[in-house]
Image 1: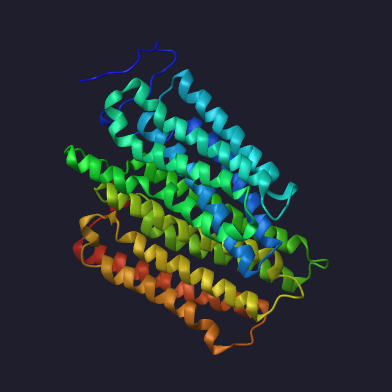
Image 2 (image 1 turned 30 degrees about the vertical axis):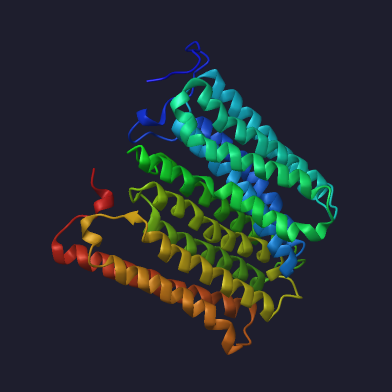
Length: 402
């Protein structure tokens, strides 16, 4: 077994991923780290609120995918190699500074080339590349698995720098290449792990982190509702009804998501884990779209086009939840009811997708009530199927068992 440089215990060399702690709890440092991303997500969502055009939405997708990539890599690095040493805490601090800087420049220095944002993303790109590369200094065996990350991440870094020298028209070609380079390494590493008879799964703590990140986005939905209601000059009974209906809509989406996702485990296999992480992207972006739309939804200029946008956002969210459940492990009681439950969620997503085709002329309360009614029907069905199964089998709720 080859080893790299030695370091004192107080410094804390990165731990080897072969020695992962089973059922590790999410640390306070990780929770503090996630708070900075609350601010970054809030800023880019606010940026989308100011430009709800197709171009603005595409820009939001790109920004979100880069922010999510930064969070995912740092979270995975901590999950695999983090410890309580000084090295881990300092690297977390530096990453928090970078993300906070991103939040500062998101709306402060707008320009066609996005120079300020690009510079911050380049710093993040280089720092995360260093994170993966530096593990090989302490464990030389790790280098065979990390080279796809360091190589492709450096390519992305170069493409970001190149984008600052070219006209903005080139962004349509460069940004997709950057995203491919950033999200491609896990699939190459999977081949390397398979050849060496190693396997890497998504840990329970990392899956919990994904759930916590989702909570951040749900928080943005609530903030969007609050901001939208705040902009209304006269808070009459109709406005307060809209407020109650909107919060109920957000809660219904949360209910469906965490009913199917909470307290589960990802299926074994590195590819499945990577696909699960990628599938969270459209899931969270759809919620971000709703969060950005709420501040305008309660205004007088709000119309059917914004209602249609909400329908599409909810549709994508529900369809993604249905797909996510296929990558999770469930208790045996779910064996016969899992597929019907998945199909019902998928079908409800399709209902929202075709809802705009009927061109209903609904008021704001009418639309919100209609959406809540459809989601409530789905929630009632999920609970009916699940608890009827438990009653027939004479079983306790598996999530309540200790």
